Image 1 (cartoon, helix red, strand yellow):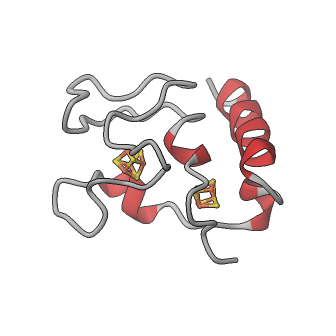
Image 2: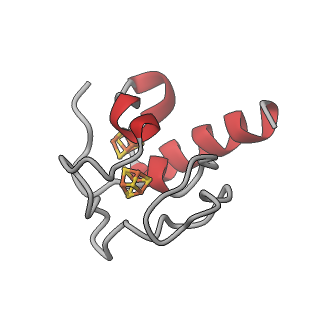
Length: 83
Ligand code: SF4
Ligand code: SF4
C-alpha cells in the first residue's frame, strides 16, 4: 500500500533507538517524533539526517491498518509485544 499522507502513526507509536535530530537518545514509544510536523509530515524526508530505520519502514496493511488510529493501535500492540 501507499503511505497515507498526514498519518504519522509510525512516527508516534513505536520507539526508535537511534538518535534523531532533536532527540539524541532516540524516541520513546507513544511520543511524537521531534521531526514530525503538526500536520504529520517528516521534516527530514529525503535528507541524510533522517534515521535509516525510518527510511526502511514501508507501509503495509498489516501494520498501517485502514486509518491513523488503527495504525497507532496495531503499532502500539507490536511495540508492547516486542518490548
Ligand atoms: S503508519 Fe503506515 S500509513 Fe501511517 S505514516 Fe506510517 S507508513 Fe504511512
Ligand atoms: S525522523 Fe521523520 S520519519 Fe522518522 S520518526 Fe521522525 S518524523 Fe517520522
